[in-house]
Length: 116
Image 1 (cartoon, rainbow, N blue to C red):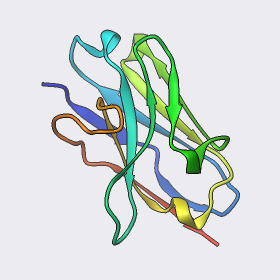
Image 2: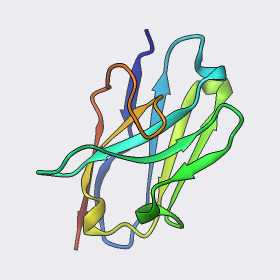
Image 3: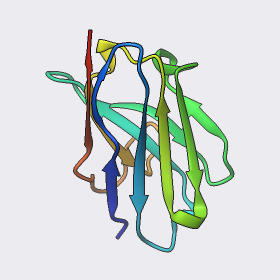
């Protein structure tokens, strides 16, 4: 079973940037896609971005141009660079191998809080 550990969240002012990391275990990382989801207070968890095993990236419309997903296969790690943060980005961020629809279990997530 894949283990997912998210990190890199924090409190940041609007307009700032963060880089989130998702460390994964399991030998299937190199052949698996990986994505990021987020859950804002009082809202359902939503898909944000995905990177395929071949490096193709996909984003939900609301984050295009501000979020960048990448992967380092040597480190079994996926990253989410978030720029131009706004209060609407406040959420717990999770990684998951599912593309638009989550698969399997979740990690603990990492909290991103944007102050205006």
